[in-house]
Length: 170
Image 1 (tube, rainbow, N blue to C red):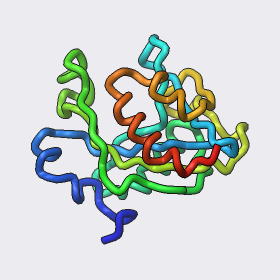
Image 2: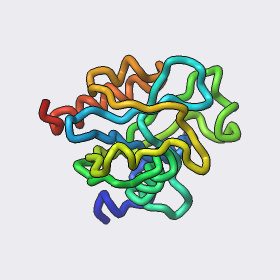
Image 3: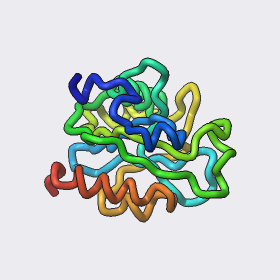
């Protein structure tokens, strides 16, 4: 089975399954200038930004989930895949959120990440979707991602810059 066709729980390893991580995808969406899309979540009033991400539905392939999440969160899936992580990256929720989000079922998320090039026009981006997640959005330089993120996602973002950064000539 190729990486692109893996089911969400394939190759996650017994450690993550036993610890109840939520299978998820994330998208590092870059524009023609290699700036990265970030959105400020509606449910946070702090100055924290994130890249599009979301859970994988039962039976859904990770790539299909990534396209669906783009459509749900930014109103368009106009993007070409440039790369994906070969493995899954995980993070734990901070203690104050443990047992409170996702119905208390998960201690964190395990994520397959995709680097995608936005192929639409800025007018294609519409965060006022049927179930909005962001109150605002912007493009930012990859070097700014870690500082913009909530503390518990900074390790993942730093790892994504390390892995995907060399694919973004600047």
